Length: 242
Length: 212
Image (tube, rainbow over all chains, first blue to last red; front, side, top):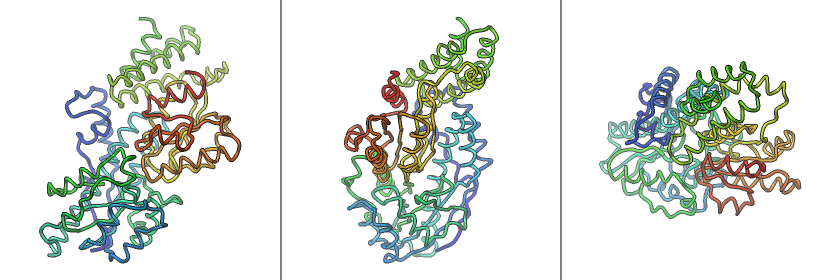
């Protein structure tokens, strides 16, 4: 299961609640009028500019082991190194909300409108994460249609830069995936352009394979702890992004 | 309420058009640029910063205030240059090499500007050499480094080490921040300060600049 994946714009448009939460506004708080107007304006701009795209490529466990090793800069012990050998299927992926949105964010910041730049940034970040989730759902559905998705199996995305997988791992990942086809490239530090892009591996595995204890060296420094939500999503039978 | 207080109140509301209008009025009334800046715009942003520190307003409201302040600054800038009014201090900021998550760094930059500090923003994925070279060339006594990823925190140490190598530690000070960063980590790598959020980063930078 390889090749470009087309998404409707709606797949990359996050909920207003998600965006407000990312801006530090709790669900039960009254949203100040000017902030509400700002977020509305940012959503309008984003909807006009977003151009979601994705690509995926199946990879063997042996080949992925080489990709995952990357430049040898991963943490000494990571969750994914214990997960991927037990996967039923591994598929590299990358998604992006497109260059136009990212250019507009930079333009707003440099033009002295940090409020709108920030609002757009939070929408685009949530949009890219949502798109990674959409890719995982699409992949799971494709596997189910082809009869290779046994009940009890789940697909979750794992990305370089998180949970001990060093960001330099994107170099080898890109050599195989070739996401340049959908407009994503890597710079010298192995960072993606456009910025609001997500890459990684979709791991199709039995539900319990995705679960791990949060006791790695880097967990103490991790303020996100999004893995808890991901593990819970597997238990709850939904798909979360990383 | 006098015009400078009104500028501050309009900043608090994020009313950029009103701030511009009032700043123009203050200039036309012959008020000094320094007074408009310090008692109107920076004073207003200080209040906004305090409200944010006390969790009485949300971050987007700070940014709306910053946008309003920029409208006022745009009007004052030609006069500031004419009168030779210096910035409070100068800081070089950027995200650690390998890290593209720049929103936290952007917020710190905005709030530093709100405090009247000149900010040289190098963007994201900044090498240790670029941080240090820029600070030396610009005569900036402080470098601020931000990271979101645990996997890029180690790049921060590279900046501190390079300053030491070049005998610049003590002359150019470092402040670090970002979700995975802690005071302990800052101490461990020898950074001079740690900002636990954007507002605190401004306080810490002011202290490093000796203007707190």
